Amino acid sequence: MACADWTDEIAQLAEALKQWRADITHPAADGTVRDPSGTMAVCVADGEMAGRVATDPEMKPGITTATLNKDGPQGSGEVHIGTMRRFKGLEYQKLAIIGASDGILPRTALIEQYEKTDPTRYECELKKSRNQLFVATTRARDALRISWHGQPPSPFLPL
Image (cartoon, rainbow, N blue to C red; front, top):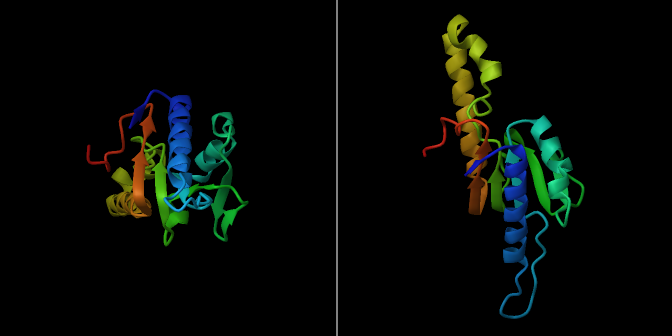
């Protein structure tokens, strides 16, 4: 899903998370209501982006978050936020991957230095980035939402 800029991407993410929470907590036929905690997640390319999502004012009204680190979710928020490498081995009912723009996936600034000086390393870094995105996308059980802004989408996305 293409977004105009970071603010638009976060605003659309917040709306999607609110809708997902409503879907999850909708009373079942027997009247029970599910707790949405830990059923939704937001996946980003790096730790700086995770921090920006967790602290963005657009996310605050009614959305609680917990940041994933190597020891698991920190806090009791209903939406887990973390980097792609933190999602390996986890599963969520609904998952959003944001910031999936060309230049971020793959992280061009980090790997382009190898393109001419070490082509083997360059290809390895591209493959690693592609694999991390693949792993992240497979963490979603029922719903996956991918968005980007500012640049074209990642070349890894088959659009």
